[in-house]
Length: 217
Image (tube, rainbow, N blue to C red; front, top):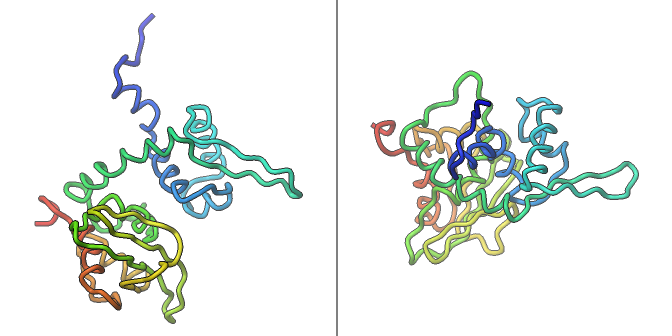
């Protein structure tokens, strides 16, 4: 019988994460357990059936655990396992490669969710060792009303992101979704954003998304 799969660690890993949605779902769950409806809001281009299929696969692979609560109506949440969280380490080099070689303005078949970029900030922001700060990243509507926010924390040369307000914000960066898209996209045009507080800390965060390599030229 002809065997189609190679026995090697990279082939085994790609067999698990080769579907691009698997890592994207894991990225969303990195910030805590979510219901199916909450995950659907993050992926408006994916049908409910397709999302459930991926979650079932991630559960069978040991990447996700399903919590069922005896409530009316029934509540089900999905949470990353230790293996699922460990898999997120793959994201950083992938994101950095994409910023160097594959980054471009949004294409026709891509939806823009700048908060997805916020959730990736820990993969691309490389603060200097002397930088210790909390930077709030806020998406606003056209009237200046905050729609969502994340906080990036810098300490000891590393950056982490949490989905809640800063305990003590050293800098605050605000803008509409379109302004953020201009700032985080290959144009890296930050003029539409409003920066308050420690400007150096804010600029360190924004610089993490500056494209490099051939795409930058």
